[in-house]
Length: 365
Image (cartoon, rainbow, N blue to C red; front, side):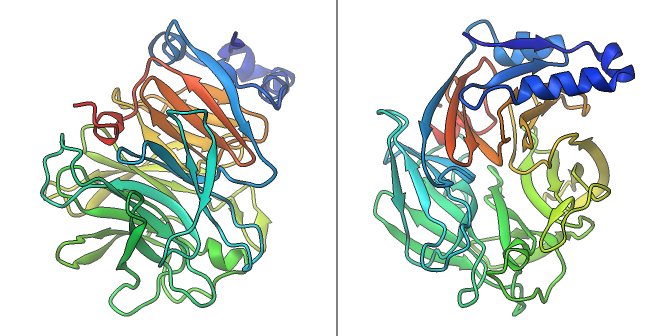
């Protein structure tokens, strides 16, 4: 049983009470996902005829915050918990048994101090339709002792190694999110001082930027420096664009400034596949901020926001919302659906739409 509300855009354009009514629907239940449809394609092309939702887990700590990467060898989905303000109980990796009963296990890996975003990783040069050698790259935000870095983890063997922990000698601030390019194997990642703003990292010594890193050669380049707080990062399915979220609306210790960016920017990737150009404002989130970001195979863009998962078409028009009370920092596409990370709670939704990376990450080629 699902609750789908069809939004009347003309009414919304002239009625703030109607907007408040929609906000009330989005936050009506702490145990269910509701669906707000702003366009018929949300129901027909994304949800599909067999849509369902369920609360699959609720815990007493923020186990479901960022990342969300499946590993074929273990059959588990790996999320990361939220920073809870204690160095004695640091951020942990949450392994979710999605093929079993969705039970979870808290893990820590050597070299990984404060995990945040992540991506499935494949050996550089391997075919884009091959899942052989799959591992996970986690963003390590670092702490007052350990540097911010990218860490390669093989969850099947519990081994790990650092891929990069500085920019030509300069410390990163607090690496946030990362994606591996499926053709070149390069790692594209964002760096923003949320660790400093949350009091577990030193003051930044480098500009807030996005980077491209060649893990097989060591080449690292800054590719974008025009976001106040570069956060989530994602490729379009045709690999012509990079999406970067700017979450400057929410920083520490100043907290929220609603005039700052809550924005997704789209960049063109240069023909050589190494640089970004032609920044365009793609979408602005009306609730909270766009954190974790992913695309489906049709080019639609999904982001975790203050009231759930927002979905825009490739032109930046809002199609719909997977509404969750308290919002979602991130989520993970799986075959036939997605898991929504609501900090303390984990939801699953079945969908017709397919995530951009699902086939490779689940070995379905």
